[in-house]
Amino acid sequence: MRLIVQKYGGTSVGNPERIRQVAERLLETQREGCDVVAVISAMAGVTDNLIKLARATSPQPSERELDVLLATGEHASIALVAMAVNALGGKAISLTGAEAGVLTDRVHTKAKIANINPKQIEELLSDGYIVVVAGFQGQTAEGAVTTLGRGGSDLTAIALAGALGADACQIFTDVEGVYTCDPRVVPGALKMEEIAYDELLEMAGAGSKVMQSRAVEFAKKFGVPFEVRSSFHRTAGTVAKEETANMEDVVIRGISVERQQAKITLAGVPDAPGTASRIFSAVSAANILVDMIVQNASDQHTTDISFTVHESDLPRAEELLAPVAAQIGATRLMAQSGVAKLSVVGIGMRSHSGVAARLFDCLGAGGINIQLISTSEIKIAVVIDEADVDRAAQLTHDGFGLTRFAQAPPVKG
Image (tube, rainbow, N blue to C red; front, side):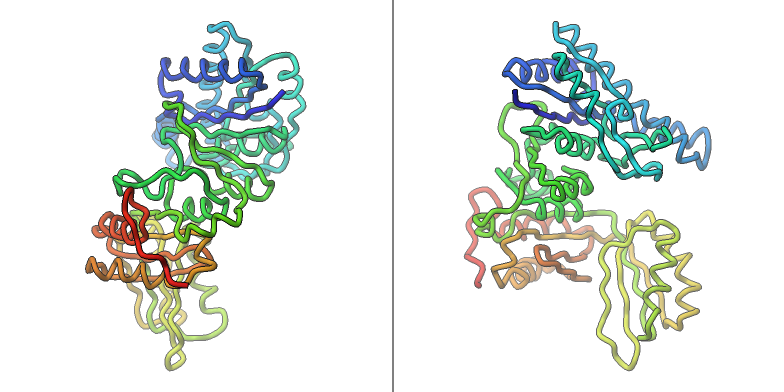
């Protein structure tokens, strides 16, 4: 009998009607001759409301207690889904992350999965149950409740699919798959039939919100293919899998946009060993995530170092770096909010030249100034004014022939 793991996000179980629709789909899958494990997120808005409640109660709540609180969102969802399946004549049982055998490290609010013991799930499946598992959570070896970070239900589903040797893993969400760009930004964006893990990982890291980055990393590491598809439509979605030779025929797979970014530049930094370490150690100690880092070539034994952070972290980063800049002898500390990151992604870039030139042509034709450039083997990212990012995405999408019915000249190489 085939085993299918299905994950349903918060919007998919956002009200009683949608919960019943999920229950119907689970039963339908079981009637097709499959064992079914469902991984469920908290109902839409519940996690945010619990965080607000915690912060209204305590300005700096303990992360341990915050995990205990946040886990209750999924507990409610799994119980309701199991109730709905049973009310429709099915046979379902709900399990918390701990009951499902999800063992994590001891890092609260962003724990990593250390191991999964699926014995109880397998026994329940053999008894004919649809097993409904709480996403986003697990427990430490000592039995403490942990959560896996926002979007962690994706990780739970993929990890369970790997541990159970599932025949399929389906990520049901409020979109029909992975698109060449956010359709709200580029109306002509196309849904992709397939995407390589590396491409989806780069898009997720560049601002695409379809999948949690850690979930994609896990799928790549353990070779777990999965499909992103809609909870509300029956159309096929996008399959994420190991790259194949024909995938390189598509030079650019998609375009991602990340807003609310800020740029920090330290000018006149002495070009000496350990200087960069002092800068980024100060930022890291405050748990501020740094994204793009660009360092100019050394001139007269000094250099400029620029990097991006989330806009909300800018005031704290400036506060921390002001004394560091003085200590290392930097001539100036500059900060700018209101910027955004635009990324073009595709494994075809490995075997095609001219991608950067075309990107710069697209932006130049639109009069859009590039402030920073960063590249990897399959991605080119630029920082531009946030006010220009929607137009930049449309121009780039058209320029690479990704927009519906648009045709672009071949990239040279």
